[in-house]
Image 1 (cartoon, helix red, strand yellow):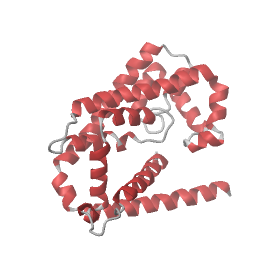
Image 2 (tube, one colour):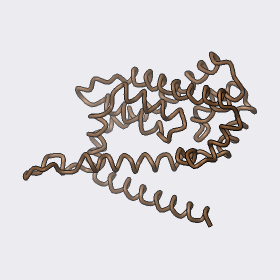
Image 3 (cartoon, helix red, strand yellow):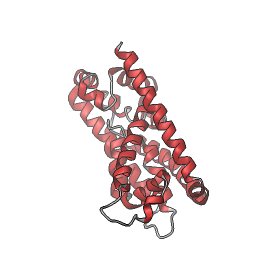
Length: 239
């Protein structure tokens, strides 16, 4: 979970740095004085739409390291800005559709490839690029075996298990319609909870903008600490 957030944080910082770079103009633009948090807001406002929400949530429910916490809450925050064409209701709907697409990919992939290939892929170099390993798959499979088909509903609220619970469902060849139903219910409720976070943030947008520079420094410090922690952990693991 921490690795997923860290990777997304680094990618977001890189994209925002490129977007915030001054153009070849002698006069500085108005966005040069924006804080990192405000650059994030501008980036989300310019790039958030129902299609991007669906794609990102599909990635989040597959094996790609895209945290849903960095998709739904910011989208709802954008929806609450004056003049926005986004609707909180449709954000939840398209976010849930994306989750179904990503979960179905995991389900079908696991069902067709089988346990041996899935575990081999998880421990491969490519699998590690997606932050996978056999221990995570085993954990998700053990949870599925213990709780049965309802685990595809409850598992949507559990970190690590959330985006991997569809793999053991596919390995067990769970009834696909039941899988879709439980996944839709779990993902829908989870998206509603995330939407609430975005709603409360939107209600306090004036306060966030007031202290945006302080919050930016705090996020940068947290990102640096996470990066150092990840490097140290990787070095220790290799030793």
